[in-house]
Image 1 (cartoon, rainbow over the protein chains, first blue to last red):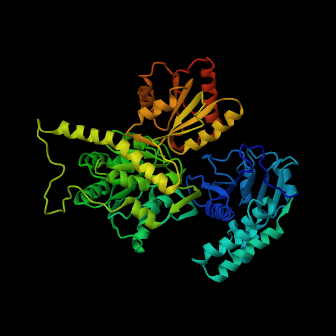
Image 2 (tube, rainbow over the protein chains, first blue to last red):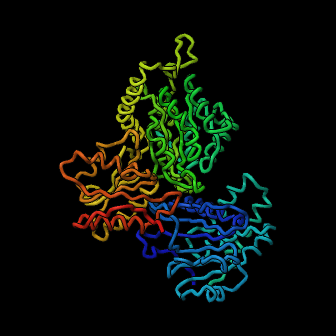
Image 3 (cartoon, each protein chain N blue to C red):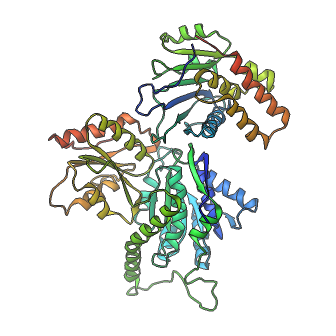
Length: 202
Length: 396
């Protein structure tokens, strides 16, 4: 089953609300920015905001992304996300990542555990889509560092369709092009492609 | 030349730093403080890159930063700075000197609360502490408005009929750090809009020697000085409206001291400043779908206080709520509430008006909290009782 955004009973048509759970240092903010810029490239409106707090490396953090074809008025945290992205599966035991998740929402987790098992462990209804991908493994293979944020954006693109894969890759080339070598850019692009292909859902 | 707009996905601070660069100040003196830091960081980078020719002064405190701004402005320079929260508090003494010397300094204030308990997040207690310091105070709902206000502030401050410092506020983290979609204008359009600065009474104009901020003996013209500041502040209202109208023409975006939404047939409304106006607009639309004739009254300028405009917006209503993002301990309510209620005093008909304190220290302004206010208003409009005592939204 592939989840598609579609209003979810919210007041704004096709407003997609994404909540990111990560540990500080894993690049959740960078990923949220990448998604925001991809949305802009598709002429969408967007918001990307980290929940700033004690930013010590490894602490659980949240970030929020809203995407909509219409201007977004709301300026608050996301209580009822359509999509939850978990960058570190050790958070599943620490934080209630699915709190307030819409009954027809989706959860995307960076983990080696199969989606059926994650779904059972989180006690989720059948109507919720659970998608799993070993983004850390992919990042270690391609980028040679455990930075799962970029591959997770690839998985997000596949599972939700809220952002376009080619647009993500185009932006990576554009934003990384100024700072990094071609080797690093290629590695990031490969990580996005692999996560897009390898993500499995239940 | 038509204006060239560029659509960007960026933060409020980045928008504001860009506006500062486009306004090309002669001097920026600043001290970094969260969540203002990225404004001065980005601006310092523009200076280092040679993209703006500004004397950038790094100071050892905010008191010194404002002192340097005052010196530079008195000398005849266009001056912009930025601060927030405890930094603004540390500037307090110098704020009055800037306005008393009638220096058109522009300052971005990324609203941050004051300790204790220690908290780096948004509320308006910083700026409300400075509300009587003789500065024009503008508020922004979005990064776009923060950008627009920055550019307008330069024109307003430097207008020969005004010559007062302007503080342009944007909500800390909420507006400063979240990425959203906004538009910038091309450099040439902004440059020609703000124009060249012709200082009045510049200290470096050696042909016309003047002195600033002198000692006034007892019996000297101190009270007359204060009255002249008051007159300039009152006069600034029409200047702000005129500059706002000109800017709207250029940008295609609306500006007024008090902006209204869904107020044509509204029976109840919420008065608010800053980023939460968006939440109110969103919930007002939902309430209308439920049959409540709800509206939004957004205050973009707190000093000078737009009393006439507020009365015009509120006079036909059955119930009004005013949201204050700061406390005024022991007062009859928050600053926006007490002034709004005072403005309504001269009306023949008494309108039920309720105050809510919200969002202190960055506490999340959830949509259900705004909905609860509209529900209260709807009850009052239907003949219910005005709630007494403290209304702290979302306090556990």
